[in-house]
Amino acid sequence: NAGVTQTPKFRILKIGQSMTLQCAQDMNHNYMYWYRQDPGMGLKLIYYSVGAGITDKGEVPNGYNVSRSTTEDFPLRLELAAPSQTSVYFCASSYSRPGPPRGTGELFFGEGSRLTVL
Amino acid sequence: DQQVKQNSPSLSVQEGRISILNCDYTNSMFDYFLWYKKYPAEGPTFLISISSIKDKNEDGRFTVFLNKSAKHLSLHIVPSQPGDSAVYFCAASEDSSASKIIFGSGTRLSIRP
Image (cartoon, rainbow over all chains, first blue to last red; front, top):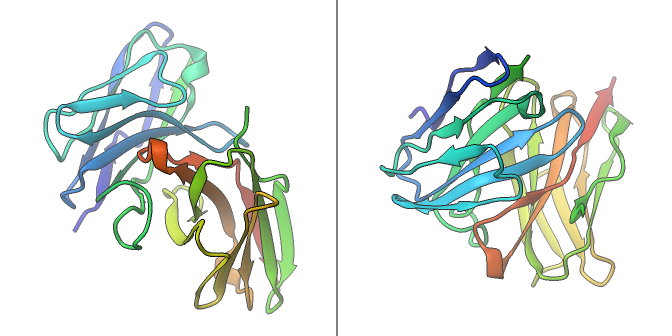
């Protein structure tokens, strides 16, 4: 059982380039999320999805786009990369909305994708 | 505006003693709280959670305490072990925005021998 798989693990972009961070989960989870973590900061929610075809903005969506065409995949698209997007990006999934009972709402995270924009 | 705050960036505790990690929040609508643990080069992993209808939840060496009136929660680890050295994130969610979990900035816990 692979869990949440993110690719690539590392990437260096030039300013203005575009790229897609891939995220796939094999746990049949309905909810998927993209977070970014800047040094010394917590995780900030970029976008999330409650099911295929449904996405919504989080705290810091500017400069990013997402799609959710299948339950398994939730790619994050960066258009016109900027140095401010240098960060570690984490994809996560959960079976249901956050909340009790235990075993349903906990987020499962991928290992992260470290992106540097120069 | 930080809704979830972890004011101690780091904490050092001797092996075998108690580790206490603190978290404060500002949004009174938060009704579910979680702690995540993160090792370097890995994603965070779920540790323990508590609903706002409780004031304590225990799981082995880990206990989370919630003080709603003070908008404060804490994670106690007893006894602390070397493998507990990691960054711990406090997180919270509210029922009206049930799909969003807001994370704190994390506390780096170091267990010294």
